[in-house]
Length: 138
Image 1 (cartoon, rainbow, N blue to C red):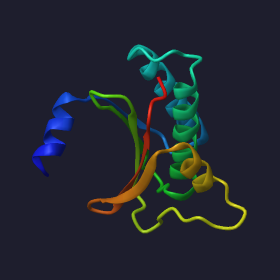
Image 2 (tube, rainbow, N blue to C red; image 1 turned 45 degrees about the horizontal axis):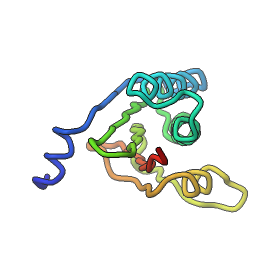
Image 3 (cartoon, rainbow, N blue to C red; image 1 turned 180 degrees about the horizontal axis):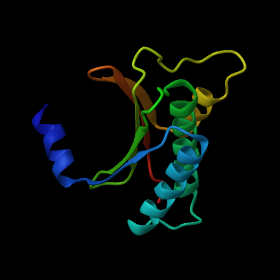
Image 4 (cartoon, one colour; image 1 turned 45 degrees about the vertical axis):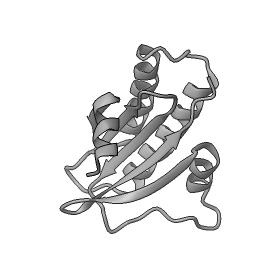
């Protein structure tokens, strides 16, 4: 960990919630993300909240559909750095199933269009975290 990432973590606000790897869990993740952003002062009907809600919905849906293991959930994390923007992270237990862009699949295309940047990193011992950065337009 670099000193830069330590400084960002210390200055950032963070929200983390474990959710069931079900469609209801994915929906709840989106709803909780919106409520947290509103609590942080983002306008509920603003473009940034709508964008973040779409990205959370897609990443959570992918965690449920492609990252599910029986008896295991997924984790949603929102990180708000001191400046504008938001990092969305969804962690699931299936590290061997990485997101890919494929014909007919709109999920990664949607995230690619809405996020400033996104990627995936391992979450040892066997999971992965898919992250997306949203730059606030406010």
